[in-house]
Image 1 (cartoon, rainbow, N blue to C red):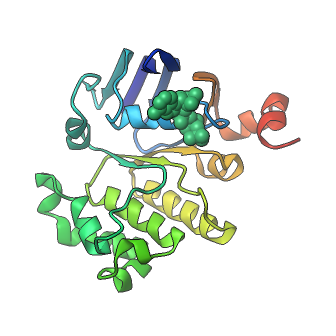
Image 2 (cartoon, helix red, strand yellow):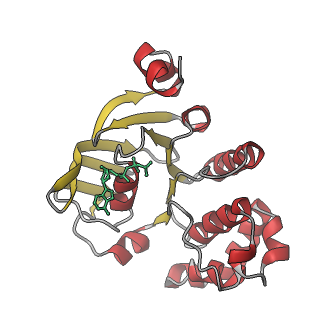
Length: 234
Ligand code: ATP
């Protein structure tokens, strides 16, 4: 459903991605792992339309979206949960969620989507009127994911959803991500928590210094000595 071909992205004169090619298949849960500064956030922000590719192409559900403005990526059915969540902390949880469904096709189904995200994260119901900034880190991450789901995307992009959360909350978060994907939504997950990300994913890409250096089934990748050395401390 998503095809990146030879994607190049740079910040000014500094290249961040070199000829990255990657596919997300319908219904797939895919992860991109790699060390700090590998280009994972750059990659996911480019797929979300927030950064412009300097070269290469992005096709989504058969349409070339490479040069479309950011809001058209959203209209096409791509939703991003950005690194650091980026909630409007002074606004209520409900207002944050409603902002996720501002597009016409999502707006008409706002009530139903609200019930769906509350079913996924029940704690949200009692927090609807609270300022988002007053929630715990884990709760804020749930609201950030719920806000993205309110747009009714067909591809959900998650940038480091486990960042800064306790192990128990991380476990719940990955269970929720697996549940979302189990409903048929394609998910692209960028993570430094390699073990957890590989555990939930169907396929994985390893990104280093802006390049894809490995790709395959998580079990196959984790069996490779160089991956074990680099990411599992073996
Ligand atoms: P992290 O896990 O630390 O977020 P990452 O894999 O997501 O790392 P990116 O944040 O995409 O990596 O960064 C890739 C490269 O681009 C790095 O060399 C980084 O210093 C550089 N970079 C990222 N954002 C900017 C920016 N706004 N301006 C200039 N350079 C940037």
